[in-house]
Length: 425
Image 1 (cartoon, rainbow, N blue to C red):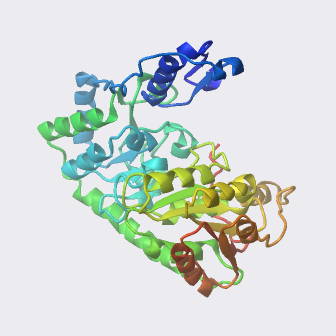
Image 2 (image 1 turned 90 degrees about the vertical axis):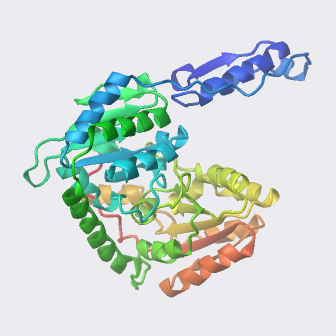
Image 3 (image 1 turned 45 degrees about the vertical axis):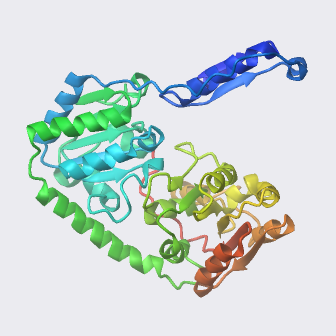
């Protein structure tokens, strides 16, 4: 376990357990956060020991280098077309308030990435995720915060669109080990992200940013145009159902504090396009590796942590096959969750790219119109299959009103794949 965890150790006696577990939680929760593996020998699990329980660990907040922050502030203040990218670690590091304050205080356009969605509320005039291609392709400075420069962000290579030159890139991370080593960076800093973003805002204020009104206006116009184009898909009346129609029915029904969990491939790609959470923590996903099957666990946690909020789990039919039996736990623990399955009877994220690359696909089809709602009903929950786009909204209403784990199994068009121009490699 050591190569894939921050700490891996065996606690040899019962007397070692209290201090060992305290260390495990401290290491796991320290930047950069990650998994810890602890093993206790079976015979010691039945022994007893006296110990003094530790108090909750005090969070150590690493202060960013002031000179590095000042240098980055000068880059931001001198840029004509800057954009800020806010990733998962902004939320995980508790820096969401500092991020929103920075965006609003200096007026910089922002894109949210991964579980950073919701840090800038959906509909905010400075949230330009719907103009992502234009923002990253024509900007002259991209400041990436709290997320790696991986395939989702072109490995840190931006610009070049419509004849624009390559863009200068700044990387801000929660720890030194997370700062990119492969990208050519114009600046970087690391530390507690709330401190990083607060200090950066103060430094830019001291210098005085340029007037970015023309740049913001251009991006906002693209956001509005994209939303107008999306409206047609969101209201699609096609038979079989276009996956986008599901989001056309779901999004208006989501409350501001709703938690939406993505567990799927092609179907959840549409969610990333259409769902913009209103609050931090309003979007959960399995991360850049897309490990299917994590959604039910996340749904349980979200229901426990936010008992009064809507909790919606979005499942592809492939992902449903990994963990739908965990509905048994939802039922036994009385944890009502609304599940929506985009059921196109295929591994859509594999079938489409194979067809694009090779002209054929193999091992990508699933049984047609499987009754995943029947599985949920057999485990003590409820649900229904929907084939008519006009019935999606009423079915979602019944799911929210049911008070039990409820799966809306929507049969969708396998040929209505998420539009892709790249495979991220």
